[in-house]
Length: 378
Image 1 (cartoon, rainbow, N blue to C red):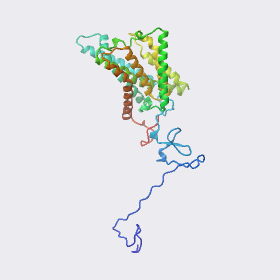
Image 2: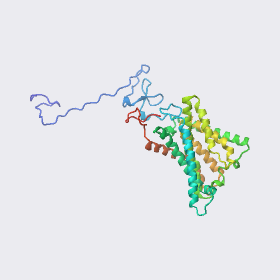
Image 3: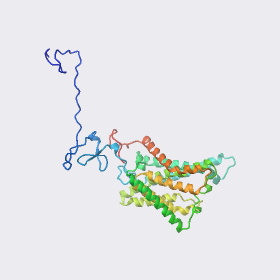
Image 4: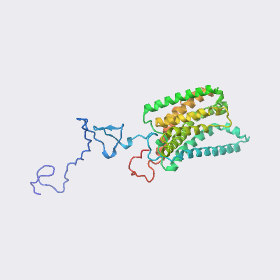
């Protein structure tokens, strides 16, 4: 290079080989653009942020001029129960979870009675121990059932997402709201007609009488308010609707029937009502058909709304009404605790969904998706 040659920056003179040369930056190539459709002349084309990260989806996302819709995989909502799932659980996962829950409660209750009886100086009878510790036993049972609902499907598939148990936001909000209103109205109308036809009243239901511990102490009032309006709705909905109903529905749909949601709702509803049978409370058993019908309605609510939050809100609201109208706590502020029980139940379920995302893996072993890919939609 001669002294008269131009420098790379355009200046004249000799080039010093020991001085750095400023090279203008190389601009990245423009991102691919989606051409406008012939049916929409003059429309501004849409530039995806990164074309490979987008998938076509109808009804959601950004619409290109040609009518194509693009969304990121992370923006894809969890599929509702009516959508086909990528890896459905086997039909026997739900019944197995129910069996494990019942066996677990039996063993835990017997163990608790034995321990409390052995530690008591007066050696009370089994009935006295059960009455004395009923609120703690009920809360422990529901915690056990929540654990069974989360762990049983994971043991079969080594994979769990919160959306698989229905812990997802409603896919369509107006549909969830309408489902909530319809189920509540139908249930209370049906219950009123049933009570009128069989001449039943509040005295015919011994589930929430004074023997259950309400009104005996503040501790019991708080424990039973949380038990009936928070713990029981969350545990039973995850176990009976999020797991049992879904596995029966998917199993029937895959093998025999297209109208499997209705039959699966009926089966899970009968099992749900039968769980509440109590040999020691004959009056309570008068309402078992009502509880079976409630189980059926809750299953269909899950089917149509696509979220377990609607079920938990209905279940908790019903328990709050029953608890508040049939009991007399020691203090009036306990009624406020009962009233906000449905909101607490929703908050607890949301925290459980966060816990599932932290504890359980995002993709199953041997998945065809690369580790860097978004979690599979199920």
